[in-house]
Length: 221
Image (cartoon, rainbow, N blue to C red; front, top):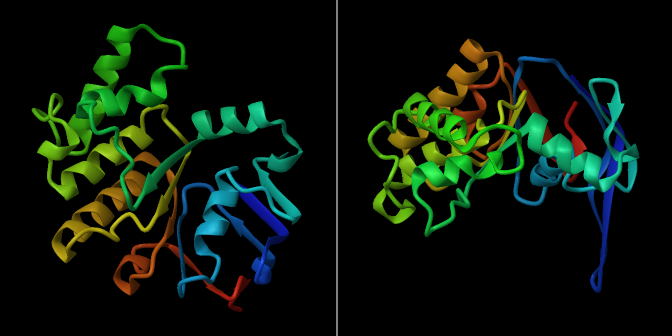
């Protein structure tokens, strides 16, 4: 599904040059559950956001199903993110004044379909993640675990092939973390979605079918 060839990402600052990714190459198969581990500053999130088309590499190629992402226009990359990728982040990024249902419907705004159909789809997704009956709740009226479930439902709104998760259990206690990891595992095994997850947790990393480890921007062999 993904082929990453000799990818480097260099940032310049007043303190000098930082090589966030250093000549990284690997493949990700369709329907796999890949975990990316490494210490803080090792390049984990940079790699994940590069796969999501949000960070353009300084060197190298990222190929998604025979399509070189960074030979694409900005509009093409936006379509790629909207149609192929679902993002789940540590901070949830829910809109505080929108209900759970409205938050899930957000990615559908620029997709074809009638509002009634989109609402039914959003309701089914909330039910899918165990939040039936919570559709009208604002984020502040939900627990942190429930907020992350809303974020996962939102990530599924446009039926993406790939879920990119950046520390999805970082703000959760061990019990809630396990619930979210089991949900991601179920999406991978039962719905054939490719999951790529950044985590600092050894327990979370064990949920993957494949594991990548970064040290100072380089893949550990």
